[in-house]
Structure formats: structure tokens, C-alpha cells
Length: 579
Image (cartoon, rainbow, N blue to C red; front, side):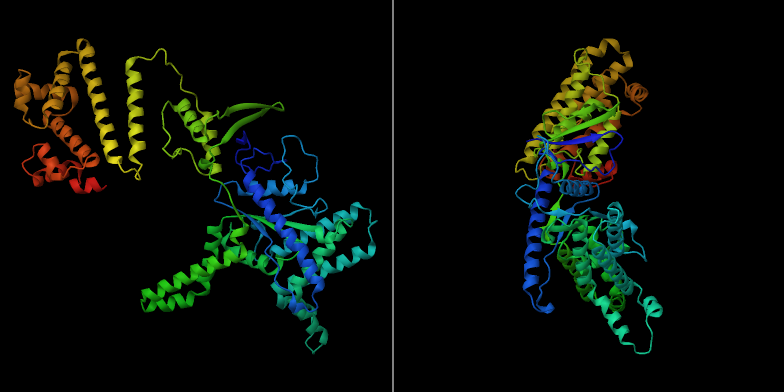
């Protein structure tokens, strides 16, 4: 089935959260991967509850399985939109599905599974005071308080009071960790009170107390659901957005939020997150780096650099295992994609542009042709450098193109010159498409043959133009055309002005003056232009040696040819061939 991308005018660059997921969604494969990962996390959660009940000692409990689902990609790849759409679909999993909607969680998630209202976190909210635990706790408390007020306080008062105490305890522990001195000065005495020791130990139990808080919270928010099938969803958009807080945020997730009954769904650019970890490592090893720099020991410096990068990579791999990463697709690789660019007018949708039944690349190239008149061909792989990989760039490209006025198509009324111009342009593009195929064993031979064909086409057009326009030109212009034809025929062997003046039955001085008036160049300059063009063509598109090219163009020796070529191009023949 062909996937579809719908762009709405005026909302092109906003995060797009879909109400439903359809089978033709461009991210359908990513959503299915996320649903499978969620199923694995929920199964681990139930196993963890059983093991916990069967464990006698705290030290016997094993580390909880990673509970992160990460939508990974570059800026503009659509990872934030995909993440939020997935969360929206999960929260609405029990709603009625229309015929064109897909039940993403059928046969994956138990219908009795309860998903509490998601907590969405924006890393831009973080500063030196607030952190991820503060924000999660604050949003959980707001949801609890809203429900308590909405139920007119008819909830079980004892449960509500216990939960409130748990909130207070966890909040105090968080404050203890991030502002220890303030808490100590305010609440604890210094006379050896045993309560002080007990309260100091509270911060070490933050992870288990936070887990118990979430369990009580889920039970309160839906007392009909089985706690083993209840989950709190935490969504984190652009974890890597700010290097200054990325490590702090990652550490809080790793230490306190990888726990049962919590699922973390995030949008992240892994490379950027890894760079943030490297920056943190560099700051920690700053003294060592400066010390090794004093001795100019490159080997030690390289080893240290490698270790810093390796540590960052290992850290990110542990935080977000590769098995829990969902990579966003590159747009040029989604060949079977239909794009619809729409505008809402009076609650009705008006189609501005949509792709045809061809591939995405072909459709965009046809749009470019329609708007500019320029023809671009696909590469042999079906790709094109004119079609962006990035979703945001592709949307911007389509948006800009559709604003342009279409070039009027006048194929029936086109004259022969217009047809030949289009043909030559297509010929050049075809040669370019073959030239970039570096993996083709006969690339040079193909390009050489095509270029010779192109030269024959140009020559034929040139000769036809001389005949058909000669009657419309004045005498001086006719002389220039005749001279050009002579130069094209004899430039390899004849380079004196006298030869061409003799052929035209004119004096050297008179012919030179006429040609300068008509073209702005001397006859010698035109001869040199022809020689340089031929030399460049042979250097680029043949396997002839510089000696052979020099002989073909009738230079006395390769050295003389090299000096001539460099004088007019600024490069030696060898350097030009390698460029």
C-alpha cells in the first residue's frame, strides 16, 4: 500500500500530532516497531512484579529492564510528530476505530492495560533549579489534585491522604539531593538527634520511594485497573536539545525513572546526545588533557580522545539500547509515498498539489519542471539530489515550489529552436547522470560517447543556423559566422590570422577589426578558446595521455602544451584532469 503524507497550508512547520494512525501513514513501520517494544516492556513489568513478590531481600532484586522507546533521527525528520502521534494513539487505544484506521495495539497489548494521562516534558523547561524529577512530580500532583477535586472529594480519603504524604516525602528527597545544605540547615539539628540520621538516609531510597509513589498514584487514578497492567507514560521531546542539561537529564532518567510501571518515550538525535556526553567528559578530564598537552604527546592525547568518545558512546548505548531505537526514514528512500498539499477553506479541504502515481522523486522533479521549465532526471538508483532527505526540508521545498507560478506549456506552438534547446539541456543532464555513476566499469567510455554525440548535435544545429539565418544577417555578422565555421574545422592545425583571412579573401587587418566589432574578441582569442575547450574535453573524458593530447592538438611538445594550458586556465593539464 502506498503511504501518504498530508501537508496542511499554514501548519507546514508545526509538530503534527495525528488523531488516528492509518495503514497508509508514512511512519506506520515506526509505529509498529514502537508497539512491539511497548509490548516487551509491559511483559517485563509483569515479570518484575512477580519476581519482586518472590524476593525476600532487597539486595536480591535485579536491575529493571530498560523501559525507553526512542524515536531517533536528525532535526526535521519528524521524530517529535511520530512520538506524540504514537502516544496519542496509545491513550486512545480503546476508542472505536474507523474502517481506514489501524488497531496498532491489537494482539500486542492487553485490553485491560491502563495508561495514565501522559506526562510530556520539554527539556527547555530545565534550568539550574528545576529538573526532570521536579517536573514529573509536579505534573503527577496536578493530575491527582484535579481528579480529587473533580470527584468532589468522594475518593477514599485514607488513600488520598497516604498518596499526599508520599508526594511530600518524595519531594523532600528530591530537594535533599539537589539542595542538601539548605535542607540540612532548615530541618536538622546538630546535637546528634537520631532522626537526623534517618532523614539523611531518605535520599538514598528515592528510587524505590518514587516507584511506590507511582504505584499508589496509578491505583488512585484508576482503582478498577490491575496495578500490574497499569503504566505511567513519560514523553521527552528532544532530549539532546540543550547540551548544558542533557547529561543532567540523562542521569536522572537512568538513576530514578528506569523502574516498573513507567514507560519513557522520547525523541532524540543520538549523535547530538553523544556529543553532549563527550563535552561533559572533556570538562571532567580537563586537567588531564591540559597535563598531556604540556608534553606534546600525540599518542597519549589520541588515546585520551578515543577513550572520551568511547565512554560517551557506551553511556548512550546503555541509556538507549540499540534494540530500543526506532530510526526515522529518509524521505528520498520512501519511494511509494503520496504527498498531498492541502488548504482548508471554509471548513473544506482544497488540494493545492498532490503527487501522481509515480514515485516521490519523480513527482517532485515533475513539480520542479512545471514551475521552472527545467528538466532533471532521476539517478539510476531512482534518487535525486534535488529531493531532500529531511521531512522538514521536503515540506519547505514543496511549499516554496507551489507558491511559484507555473511555466506556460506551449508545446504545440514551440519553434524548432525551443525544442532543440530543451533537447540539449536534457542531453547534458543525461551525461551528468552517467558521469556520477562512479561504480560503473564503463563510465568513461559511455560519457565519452555521449559527449561526442552532444558535440555532433551542437555542430548540426550550428550549421543549420548558419544556413537559415544567413539571409537575415548583415555582412559583418555573416563574416563572423563563416570565420567560426572555419575555426571549428581548422583550429587544430591553423592558428595564424593570415590563414583565415586568406580563406575569406580579406586582409588580416580588416578581418581582425570586423571580428572584434562583432564579438568583442580577436581571432587569436577565438582560436585559443577552441583549443582550450578541446583540451579540457579530452583531459576529462578520454584516457589519452597528455603527450597524445598535445600531439592531437599539434603542439610542439607536452611542455609547450602544458604552459599554454596553464596560462589560460590557471592549472596544469594533470591538475585539471585530477580535479
